[in-house]
Figure 1 (cartoon, rainbow, N blue to C red):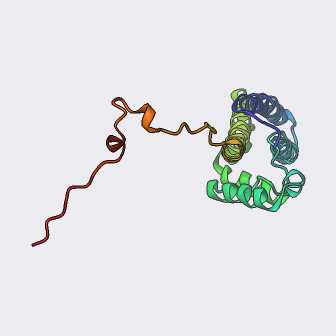
Figure 2: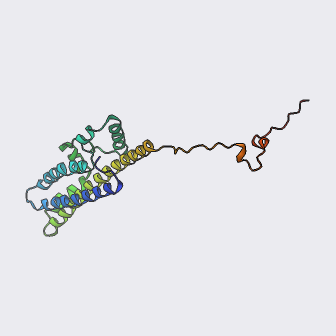
Length: 197
């Protein structure tokens, strides 16, 4: 994992959000290409680069996870499964991207139709493309952030437990000379006498 503190993790998230905004703008601009379907192909290409870049920034790419010890890797995959991500720590394929775009199907279809509407159509299509791309990217960032944060918390807790020691203090024997009245019998509490019937 690349972040060692929550502050570093926040900085990675901020950088990734900026990267998503830039790529989403490129997706919106792809609408201006007059070839039907060219913008969808551009979206697939953008996501094929964007999602692995986000994984790598958070230290969650397939190669980075392969380099972890078995216990940490198991923990990370448990976190990934618990949030339901299909894109963290895996090879991102065209098929996976197409499935994501299919889930955003209404927006994509609206984008395709609206770009052929005179005047405002291309602007609307660009806005839809930008919004869809930003939504996909930011959702992936949030999932990566959550997994990385959980891992960081686990590692911090383990480091704290490993470094925690019981402070050693010398024991001062309490002798008779330390008692207020220096009565040896006062040092030992006496049990009440038992009465046998």
